[in-house]
Length: 315
Image (spheres, rainbow, N blue to C red):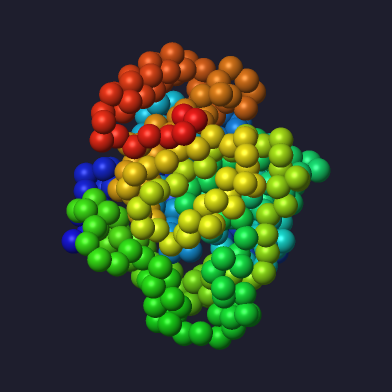
């Protein structure tokens, strides 16, 4: 139980990467919490957006690995926003505060939906250069909760947690997936009623992505073949929405592959970001490119040689 929480990697992350708190709205109760690691000279970093149950810590394995390869990585946790436009406005102000013109976004589940909506919202003055969407969706109606989305703010925290836990994997899972679920349950316990209620509201209020507004954005879709909160229909809808997207399929990984299949997920992130090397939108320090390039090629080669490895369509 809670193997991740006591792991050397997690403790190293917590002791070496400081948590920053930033207020960009007039309402000073809206606090963005984030970890910003890697070379600050990089002006187009990759930013990680968590799912409903997640905090900024859930991407610690991506932060450690990618910064080790020379990338600038920001993992964040959103304040309480009840409306998608309010979220987009707050996130834009955060990027302004951090003096970031354009960014790459990795979004898991709700984080992926918010990343798409932000790209759509800023399409006239683009702030998103590329998207990596992990177990994500494009239309909130798939959850069949649009009619309850206006009442989440009334519900007590224990009931909201029960709703979220209902989407976690049930039945036997491998030890790494069990550890990931334990860690996410632990993270869920740190969220208060308004944080949970607002995230569920964003997750379920009637909205969908308009893909024609973000057709210029490079997209990679990461999903799993085993049990997750997303239906097959939701996955198929994502493929239709982004016909030119790169696809990275994991045979297993459940709802939280970035925790329990971090090596594969990190590899797919590297491959996605590699297309921007040598441009002003590179998320990596130029001095680290050749070393990182070699490691990616070696990792890719070994994963292709492994018959049990998780294969991607286009990657």
